[in-house]
Structures are given as C-alpha cells and as structure tokens.
Image (cartoon, rainbow, N blue to C red; front, side, top):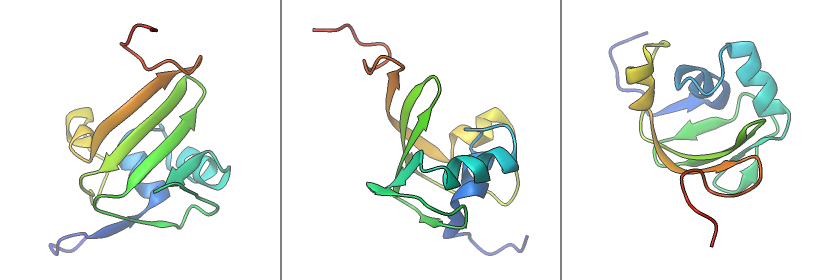
Amino acid sequence: MSSRLIDRQRIDKWLWHSRVVRTRAAAADLAASGHVRVNGHRVKVASRMLRLGDVVTISLYQGVRVLKVAGFAGQRGSGAAARLLYEELGVTAGGGEPVGHEPA
C-alpha cells in the first residue's frame, strides 16, 4: 500500500481490519447478507465504500453494534490497532437491551 492517506475503503475490508469478523470472506458474506447498514441504508454488496464519519450498524448473532468510522488501515493489525478504526456508539444484546445498562 502506498504512503498516501486512505480516505475511503470497501466495507468488507474495513469490517475485517476492525476485527468485527475473523476472516475477509466472513466480512464479505456479512456485508452481502443485508445485516449491515451504512448511515441507515442497507448494504447489498461487499464492495460498498465507506468514508470517515460514516455510521455502520451491524446485526450479529450476539446483538447489534453501532460503530462510527474513525479511520482506515492498509492491512489487518492488532486488536489495539483495530479499536482505533472506530468509535463505539452503541451495543445491544440479543434481547435488544443496551449492554451495560439496566432496563428501566
């Protein structure tokens, strides 16, 4: 990868680099399955481009994660490096309650 600043990236690569999923193939499958939204719009293809500041909503088996894109990586790095690629806006458990919050 060149030394130029990355200002956008495919959603499947970003999901993999940010360690939301374990493999790039799983990231592509997740994106194409309709379980991912970008800024409220359902993603239909793994090649959908992300930009800084986009809000990604991901429906996983353990719940829903809402992440704000904070950066991109040229390659997959450590868990600590992956956490720099997003800001966690919200997480809900399988039952729909926010994780770490008591029901009212």
